[in-house]
Image (cartoon, rainbow, N blue to C red; front, side, top):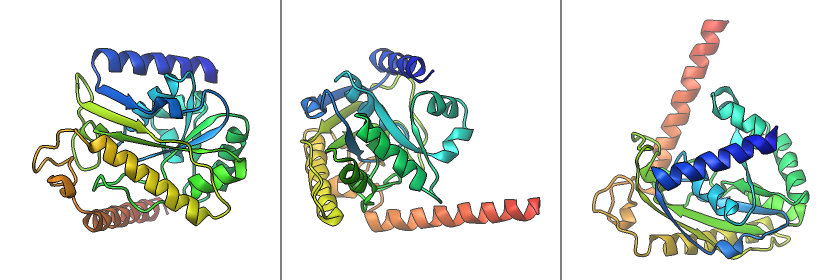
Length: 253
């Protein structure tokens, strides 16, 4: 069932973008290999930044399998699509299974989409990178493709209302040259961060950034929180989530 559902999803997303969705511009699509496995490392600024990445792969006649947090399995229709389109659910409390599944997919010649930042960046700057993306690329013996999508945060991000329908927001997507992992995860991670930073700067160059706009980083004159401010907001969110979980467990006890 995976291939029919994936095909349906591809047709639905590309049609929606064509008729009512954002205006996506691509640079460097040739850097996505037409065959063979690769980790596609993406920035994470909102809830739909998977979309331009998936379309980028589709335009190269490839399919991008995403690693998505397992809790989304309980959300209809996301859970249905995850189960039937080859996505890889991630249990954040025990991620070894998802990691092994991703390595297996990569060895099988698939593209696997990973967010090195793990969670959405409220500052819209690149956060600290986890090492999972580079480690799985090294273990599978495949390259890492840096990919930046800029402007997606205007459609749907944390702390702000979504704007999904009849939305002609411009999105710039930049795909960098493939990186080969070295023996050192730290060195590869640093190289990946440098490559994604360069792609981000290219994506932002020439993109209009209104002063004080919530989706524009402070570095570019916007009102988004700085990285330290965003970290405090993330910590507060985690604390509130833990409190709600504790309250729920106490009621069920």
